[in-house]
Length: 432
Ligand code: NMX
Ligand code: MLT
Image (cartoon, rainbow, N blue to C red; front, side):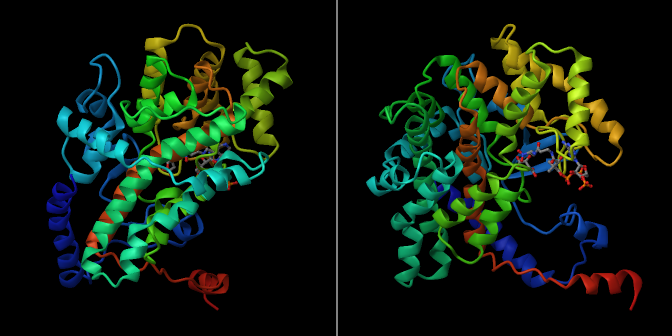
């Protein structure tokens, strides 16, 4: 797989270097002050090959939409969901893998999954009051002791081979994340009653197993979950952070630990927990878990009036219902009959968009991925919602770290945009 990656990516690396030397003066567009003051939205600034986000249609991974991936990527069971290893292969090599290629990658990951003891010790040393995402980021950082890239750099390896050592770190890190996530989960919520990995299981199925939720339906949900959260082009906070930190030639463990502290923010990945937290607040305030649409609408207005966001709704790029939301809703329709949390997620989809739309300033009133994921997990007995962002973090490694290997084979330079004091922007807009 590494050799196939090299053959494909090396061609792109040559294109990258050729464009840099031959077309550096091409103008890509203009930058408006409004874009600078609203989070640099819409400015084409990053090269990311793993996936591309369309505001109307949603994410495509190497050109494939989520429904296409669910149909075309290899599955263990024809009636189930594809395994995320197939998506990792696609993002690295650019082709839908055969069943054998996907299973080979799965086996390769299984052989790399050994977590060093000191990482478990780091987790165990943290108080249980530290949030699962704090433990997750610290655990990832602690594995930098294992970095092949760091050792290669120190040994003076030529920079044209950096991608190779990065590839090794990236595959090792991806392989270990399910074990680390499950360890944090069982420590925090099951009194450290840990469950050993089963090396015969696929990457996502093994996570379900080690967490103690071992039915075939939960494994299918985890495979879907790991696919839909894997990547969202390069500009989202976690992907951009990993790329930025990586541009200083920090090792992949540093890059991904930094990315995870960004994912832990409530406007990004923490929203998947906040949705459930907010639903429980609503149930408590309304004193019913089967509220009417009118009661839900009142609660939403109350949230907005108190200067808070409605979690799971809105997006910086998307302008339609997130296809990741739709994929989860389809899963629920197939497997779940009449569940309170799932019913509430469906009811919010009916009630929230017209309310957000009527506010005026909110560019996208539609649900994002986080509006559904918690309800599904809750239904399957994974009720410990302060853990949910860790699952997002396990999945996001697939896209973000595949991109990091690309960054290294392309020979991307250190990222260093220009900043100015506010007075400079005022002068540009209004003169002195
Ligand atoms: N509830 C209330 N207000 C909102 C919402 C929402 N769901 N979405 C946007 N707004 C506000 C936003 O705070 C901003 O207010 P102000 O001008 O006072 O600063 C205004 O509407 C314009 O924001 P937009 O340009 O529409 O959105 P922006 O790109 O700034 O933010 C999000 C995008 C995703 C951060 C925002 O929609 C949000 O906070 N959503 C709720 C949190 C959430 O679900 N995050 C998860 C995103 C997906 N992920 O997993 O990472
Ligand atoms: C993501 O999956 O990263 C979120 O939808 C946020 C984003 O794309 O900005």
